[in-house]
Every structure is written in C-alpha cells, then in structure tokens.
Length: 242
Length: 125
Image 1 (cartoon, rainbow over the protein chains, first blue to last red):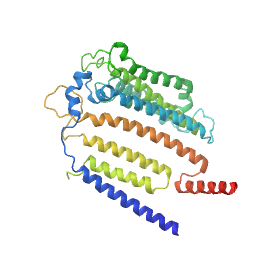
Image 2 (tube, rainbow over the protein chains, first blue to last red):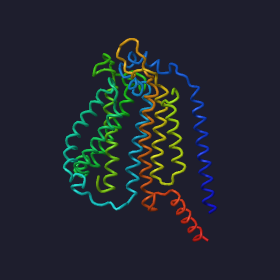
Image 3 (cartoon, rainbow over the protein chains, first blue to last red):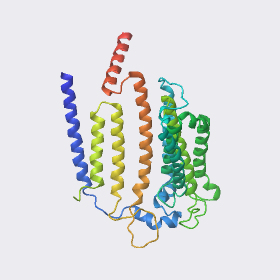
Image 4 (cartoon, chains in turn brown, cyan):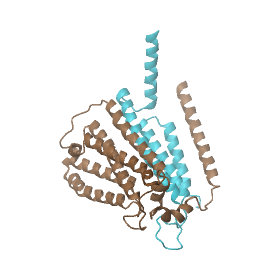
C-alpha cells in the first residue's frame, strides 16, 4: 500500500512538473517575434556561392558539410549498433521461409510488384534532383529503403535477401561511407580548403550544376538506402519473416 | 486564434511525450513517447522559421517573394536522422531486455534486477 501511495505521489509530481514546464516554455516562446532570421544571408548569397537552387541543400551540403558528415557517422553507428546487438539476441531464430504468409495474398504480391518500381523511380528522381527541388539524399534513400521493404513484404525477405545479402551490404556500405569521407578530403589536392567545393558550379537550375552537391546526394542516398536495408534485414532475419 | 500555431502545438506534444516517458511503464509505449518528443521538437524548429505566405526556399528568380528561413530546415535534418538512429537502437535494446526478462514492463524489469542483485549479495555473504 505504501509503495502504491508513493507511486501516486510521484506521478502527481511528474504531471505538475510537466505542466509548469509547458507554461514556462509557452511564456518564453511568446517573446519571440517574427523577424528576418539568419537564413536571409543564405537566400541572398546561396545561389551565387554554391550554384544550388535549393537553398536547404546548399546549406547542408556546402556551408555546413561538416555537420552532415557527422550526421552520416551517427547513422552508420546506429546501423552498426543494430547489427551488432541483434546478434546478441538469440530469440527463436526460425529458418527463413520461402513464402511468407503475407504473400499468399495475391493482392499484396501484385500491388507490391507494381508499386516497388514506381517507388524506386520516384526515390531516384528525388536523389538526382536534390539540388533543384525538395528532396535529396536522405529523403530519397529513406524512400528507396521503404520501397525495398515493400518488395520484401510482397516477395518474402529471403528472396530479396538473396541478392542483397550480408556480403553485398557490407561491401556497398564500405564503398559509400569511404566515398563520402574521401570526397570531403579531396579539395586540398585541387588547391582548395578542406570541405570546400572544388568542382565547377555550372549554371544554376541545370541538372549538372552546383559542383559536388549532386555527387554527395548520390553517395548519401546510397548510404541511407543500404543502412536502412541492413537494419530491416536484421529485423527480418531475427523474426524469421517479414 | 493567433496562438494556435506550430510552436504551441509542438510544445504541447513535447509535454505529452515527456509525460508518456515518465508515467507509462511499458517500454514500447515509452519509445512511442520518445518518437513523439523528437517529432515535436522538429515541429517547433520548423515553425519558428515559417513566415506567413512564405514559399519554400528554392530560388526561382521571381521577384517579390518571401522565402521561408532555410536554416532550421537544414539543421532539423540532423535531428530527423538522429531520431531514426535512437529509435532503431533503443528498439534493439528493448528486444534484449525482452529476451532476458520476458516482459516489457519497466517496473517489473527493475524489480527482477533488484531481486537478482540481492540473490548475488546473499551468495557472496
């Protein structure tokens, strides 16, 4: 009984603290007026400096590339962590079946087969035109990973995992990660400072413009896709099915 | 109704996520709360950079357009990726706990760990 009462008191205190936090934060946000933020400078100078029409891509792949590289490092660490720790979970670990129960439904199989190429095409478009329209490596890679999950639901994890197994995933992940790091270390060879674009900027608004931003988008898209597929494949294998 | 905007809703969602983290005992529900908390922070940051009738920061060359602040959007990208990383990793940790204690109830897991520790102490004595 005493433990129960103490728990109730703790909950009440938690709710009160949360409500006080809510009021304080709302009160402090009410002082923030609408005024031109720090982004004005990027909008004025962005196209001239980087050649990218999409200013968001210009910021995270040119002005603040350093942050993005560490963001990719965090993502790679998460993928390594998931793959490493899932080996520690024994579980039942049943054998992968040839045909999972979901694909016994014709609707799922046909819809998955029809939709997966469309999703792949859209995500490739997002990755390639990341410097011209909303999109880029991260969103395109995440979409491509989701598309291959769709294929795995329709066809079974075993069939997709046969062509994208651990060896291929390891090799591709190393290639993309080393590519991203190596590309960021190249500029000193061309007489530019570290992490500065060394490719020609081209004409803003064209597909081949804005220096190395499309290259980075391709590499990041591949890295995110492979990372998401590696995590999904780990979970699929642990569960024995999609 | 001026005060109903992304910032206010984001702060309210943050508090809901915080309360879920503190009050709920199930680890999976706690992870849902963590996801809600992360998303609410993203909503607040994006809304702070929004101007009324502003357009996306893609320079088209048309004059007299208000562009939305691109800086929060670029920085929030890291938050989204780290959100994904944290959720995937903590899901695996929940699976490890589930494997060992056969429950996702955090209080029960704490009790079992306490019990195992007391058994160990007794064994040492």
